[in-house]
Amino acid sequence: MHDQWNCYKAPEEGQAKRARSQQLFSVRKCSVLQNNREAEVYMSSACTTTTTTTTTDASASDHGTTGHQSPGFWIEGCFRRRNCKIRRAHDGKEVARIARKKARTPATPDTAPLTLGEDVFSLVVQRDADCTMIMALVVVLDRICWRPYTPLICSS
Image (tube, rainbow, N blue to C red; front, side, top):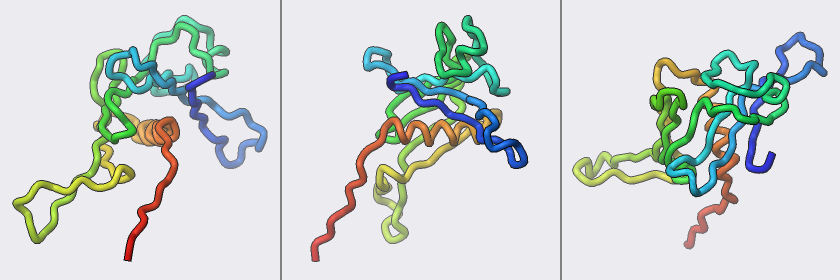
């Protein structure tokens, strides 16, 4: 369970309050030795968007362990710098891209764009990808790469 984050679907309205939450996916942070991968995403057997093959039983994956399960997606690049791609594991296709947002000033359109703060980024999701799953993954990645907030100190 170390360096692993799980994402669950909340019970629908009208379901019993004690209804068991359904695990959608788990994210594992990769070691520094794993090339350019920041994290791997393992889809739950209960998730309808699964693209993985597994050699474990359903009860193991429902409890946050993946055994010998293959990742469904991987994150390539550096989320902390907001420069990464989310790729589908079985074919390597890019399903989403995260990049720091840049802006041009109207007064000087010929100059290089200004890169905005680290918390301002763009997320481009491909048409065939599940947008809600990708956004949930971005939230988990933000928790994995968490930094303490340091406000700007202005001098007068």
